[in-house]
Amino acid sequence: MPDADPSISLLVSRAVPRLVAAGSASARLDAELLMGHALGMDRVGVIAHGEASVSAPAAGRFEEYVARRERGEPVAYIRGFREFHGLAIATDARALVPRPETELLVDAALAEIATRLTTASRDTGRDAVRVADVGTGTGAIAVALLAALRKRRMDDHVAVVAVDVSPDALDLARENAVGHGVADRMTFREGDLLPAGDARYDLVCANLPYVAAGEIEGLAPDLAFEPRLALDGGPDGLDVIRRLLDRLPSVLDGTGTALLEIGADQGEAIVLEVAALLPRWRCTVTADLAGLPRLARIDPPSIAATPLVAAPGAQA
Image (cartoon, rainbow, N blue to C red; front, top):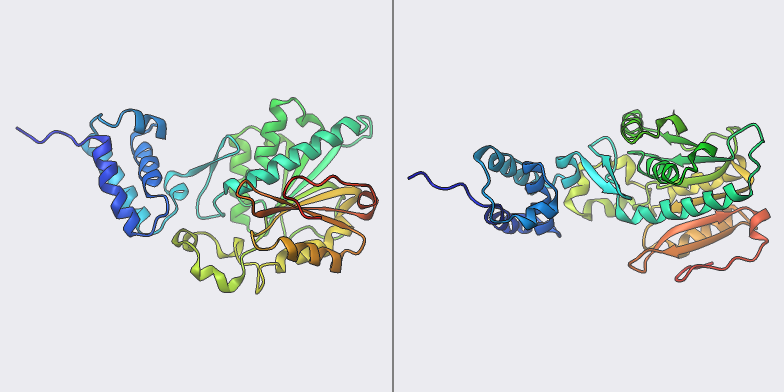
């Protein structure tokens, strides 16, 4: 009798030690996600139907995916997407893989936009809230913002400009915007940060490169597959962020706000940089769910003069 097709759980259990040996810090999760991709189901289905047989073609696809993961390729690139803020964001080597930590920036931006929409005049002749997503990459921040606003029927009074220095990344951002039905509220611009003299924005969001150049080689193997341009923040990780800070006075509206993702070791450094480059501006740092500095909110003097109640774990 021919051998029976192997079960889902058997193939997954065989893949786990291979991925551990290859350096994966989430070997079982990786194997389950790749099995789901091979079978066309989600991870819940993989776990729930572990005794189901896997056909030879599906087993072959799974083996190919595991081999790619062993070489360090990110799971998101193998699957072609990454879950982010409740959306499946198309992901490939054109841009950095969206990280869960960046969802904190999206949530803060949503709260800021909602506050501004409650006070903005609806008859100004322009969109009530102008938002820039600087270094948009996959477009994850901009797309997640607009998708969430559309669910709340708040997107008609918001316009987002997505900017990236990489034309390939910008193409990926367009694909995600179209795929999630929010491209009508977005403009895409190729460029380095935001040029002086550009239209002024109510909110600037940015997840810019913030890894110190000397630390990149020691990062997880996955990152070797991701664009170095999206990682390298110069000697101390703050070079690109510093350049954006320098431009904020010329691109933010007088009552505008900037939200910047930062590295877990940059909480004190970003406060010092803002104090040096933007006197009288205020920088408040909020921690992520792991308790690590992750989000810097930067306000101009017109807002900084007002009292601010910092969020738990924040630094002012």
